[in-house]
View (tube, rainbow, N blue to C red):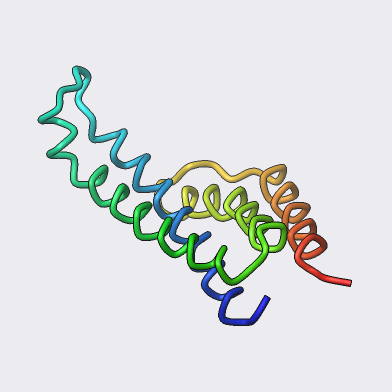
Length: 116
């Protein structure tokens, strides 16, 4: 994969990870009784759906320029990025097991994305 494709793949992973935090904020803003009006007036939900839409278009571009078996392992980085962002911005706990698992995932991404 070219450095441009790798960079854009990482941007997609960061955007997807950010979208997960935005979905969490959307969920927290939901009333107990859901209605179409509540969904349409939830700014976090609308913004996260837009972000996911744009990111999906970016992902399609990436898949046009890189094999799926090389690009997809990068999505595994979200398993480390999301909990770290949730810790930093939402005050959620971040344990050593999450960090250790994330390190293993990063090793796997590195292994899977190298070519022989």
